[in-house]
Length: 267
Image (cartoon, rainbow, N blue to C red):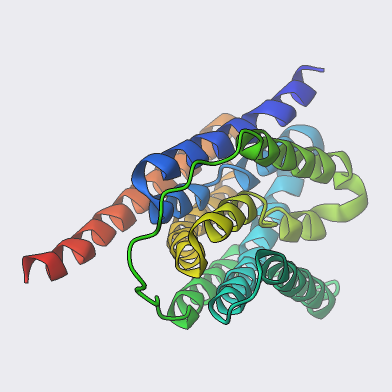
């Protein structure tokens, strides 16, 4: 019962924090926070706690491959929104891209398992190409501030809880590969992007997705550290090391972003 309680509260609380952070510091900041292991991290922890370190280690490698699918989600959503698509059509296209890519990866691998170096290479290359593939901002002026509805935050948290419970509940049925591939399913990114799109238009959605893709580099490192350490260290040490390294990478990413923004203003 205690573990179930954590499943229903830990990741949703992190999504709530990302939401509130985004409202305070802007859409790109929200994406940067959402790209941290706020949903997939707890999922991998519960995998390790319930199915064992070996399962979680294999799932962490598969999660790295799942970042290819998540990158396609971001690109598909951003371009559909840029072309004037509605929130619903953009979301459906993004989800379809994620699911088709996931099924394709699972089918291509068959019984073959890749190591973490190959998984990390796929993840980082996918994120780099996705950022380069985003549509150019339309620069139509400042994004208007719109007060979110009261049901906004509870809905985000409920969707996150449903994903965490579903994946961990059916972990044995899914297996470590498919469970890992589905771990980065865009729940936190969906709710942040959808509400940004509906309230601020396609440029707001693009800002969230860009921040998300940048932040996922740190998440990729998080998964790689887990894939290496889980067979040697305790769960607490492995997840602590992974989170620490990911935080350092994310801090460097944020510093780089601030520096990139400050240079044009200095000119």
